[in-house]
Amino acid sequence: MPSASKIIKNGKVVLSYNWDTRGPGAGAGVEQIFCLKGKFAVASEYEGALGPFDSLINAIEQTQVLCITDAGESIECDSLSVSQIIDLLQLCCVGYEPVMDINGKTCEFDPVARRYQAQESQSPQDMA
Image (cartoon, rainbow, N blue to C red; front, side, top):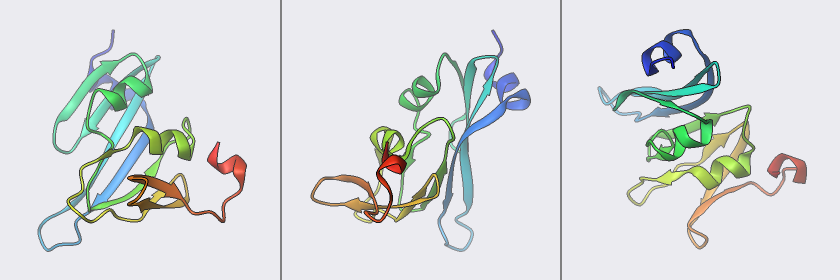
């Protein structure tokens, strides 16, 4: 079984979460999941290389790769729909949930539902 480092070095990016604090010296970065030969690994700015995992879902659920903070900007993943990604988000915000671009769709936090929602102008197949 390949190590997390080998999966990250030789694998294909299958999920990216981009963030930017927009503060001087505070930073910006990307959390990513890579796949190699059916195994997955997380490259985290905070936790380093994590894995291997047997599935993309396991890699997301067993790490904080989708821990959304007020610096969150966008998530791209060809393997998951917008709805699937929203269901997997971990909210780590402190009172300010950013508008997120998820797979090219603008998603806003609904404080009543306590979850992200894609804007209603999108077609139903985009939400599936």
